[in-house]
Length: 452
Length: 161
Image 1 (cartoon, rainbow over the protein chains, first blue to last red):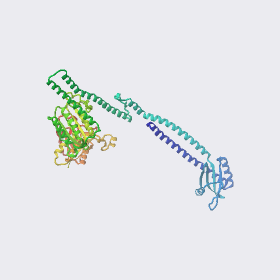
Image 2: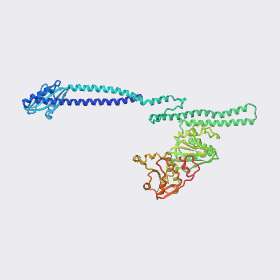
Image 3: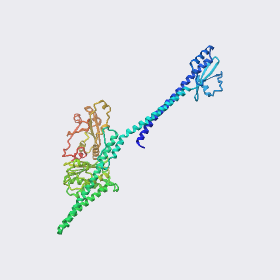
């Protein structure tokens, strides 16, 4: 069911049921009240009849009868009964009356009682006269209130139906009005495809939820666009990176083959080819690494590792790769307790990630001092790698984790732009995060956070 | 066990005083109270709706919190307790009551006046602190060469470089 119909149903159901309940209550209470009114009229008649029929003085009877005939019109199907009550309390009942015994008892007890049989109403009063105790019963059909209630019912039904129609109409308009921005947004979103990812939803500054939603959509689009661009860049960069050594190899081979050369020339050419092929192999290998860590499909060996040992291994690896380095491990924030150092993870992968980061720090700082610090909070360990190198320009920071991206100031340095994305992939696999702070020509600080 | 008070502006730098405190109290456990001073609001309505903590807690950045945890882990044998307290008020009497309530034994006075108020109501309690007659200790942090960003956790590292 569409939200529109839901809103309509809820809105109409709520209001219509309120109106219905109100009408029913109005009818019910009017009904009750009209009975009371009618009983009062019957009661007056009963007393008057009694006074006229069983007067104290004969002369009174004439006056009472006069009042009755002049001022009280005859009720529809009005009947009067006089039932004498004998001294022992038994009532001489009329055969034509079919009233329950409780009625008579109530009359005796409370001096009056009422009874209803369909449209016919009975009112009985106890009357003490010279001739003795009597129960006077007047009955009549309540025609007026029947008519009155009929009218009331008609009016209420017409009103309820009319208001329901109006309410459903209002509900349709209301739900349309409420959902208008959403439909509007839907149309806008539908028009955005991979071709025009730069389009954004309109956001006005009313600050309501729909605008928040539009803002969220726009944010998502931003990220999607970046990812798309990265993907596009990746393909072009990858083919470029792969083709450069290939071109060199082909060129070298062609040069060597286009005429007879001396053995020394061939050796030189082959050496060049070998060098370029090695570069190619390196690129493809790192690409393979990147691809493997990018997927969650393969399950790596996962176990508890000590982060301080990890740092020492990284340091050892780097000493082997680059014997002259100034990498220092900063102990100033090491936690005292060992169990704060243990993190779950894959040792080889983490080592690869960290050594990539540290190697970058050495490479882009021309072998200036690099410090690796380790700290632990309650929930994570933090590794801070700091160098005094060339830094990363502010506008390049968002892209440094995209494969093959190289910051604009790295022209002098050799690299393929695979190291950091690989490290990021690995850290993400460990549900960690990399935060980069950098200032051009002053240095870069890379903070790796890994959950305990 | 000594209760030591450090005024803080919730910058990582203010945490670095802990290094020197621990160095100067060997073989002794200390309680460290990081005090952040806030002015009482001026308007009546603000005063009535003024709650003790909730609104100020968001002044504490997550980096600062991480920094506290790092320090706590690093000196887990030397520091018994490291906690953040808000001081509300701007008079000497209020401060005296606060110090009495926290049972402070020593006040750290940063020698380099480098206070960046994190909110409009925050103020540097330096003047108030210098007037009260509690034992004080001035600590001068080493001047450092260059820091990429003072707010990050690495500011903690430099203190011992």
